[in-house]
Length: 243
Image (cartoon, rainbow, N blue to C red; front, side, top):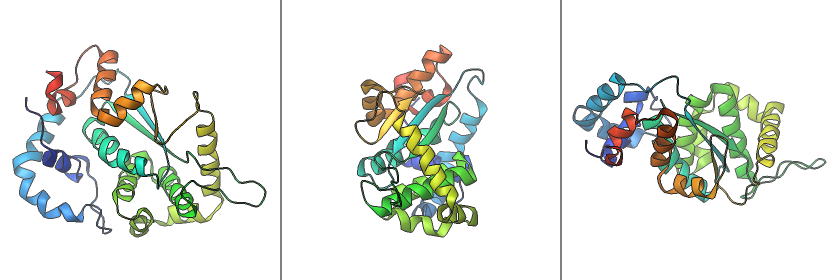
């Protein structure tokens, strides 16, 4: 078993395995030509092999929760470079929860939410919270990946802002969702001391954080191995360390 190259991983993340829609906002548009050239060489074989073997459904998935901010540089590195690719490859054994808020501050009196990186970040947080609520985590995560990996987070959201999300952001629901995220963030134990903040199965440790930042894929596979008392095919398929 060979470690899959980065180009194969990029293709694997695409709609070819997971029915991700290539939207008109250009999120995946630069890779379209690349997809066509590499599909037969790389992705088709991987999709067929992976779909042939599924993990034990009786074993709980590893839950990875990210507490983050939409314009935080560290978050914008971790989400597209570690979290989304790992989820794309290991979604059968991994659940992802996103909590956009982190260092924001609750409103006081007539003052709105305040955010570490200003009002645009508050707006980005609310857009992403509304996507998560309105279209579900699976679809929302793909949109949020597009936003966080784009040069401009808010500009990337505009072409895919559906009616439900727009009404959420402009109405009371958006503030309600942000308040819920504030309560979740403020209830963390231990309390967060930095951003991004990652918990594994609801637990934070410095060791989990360090491993998530450096190789979330390996961490998820190792955590799943503990639960399943074995190695799942996706982990074997993408990493020689699990042979």
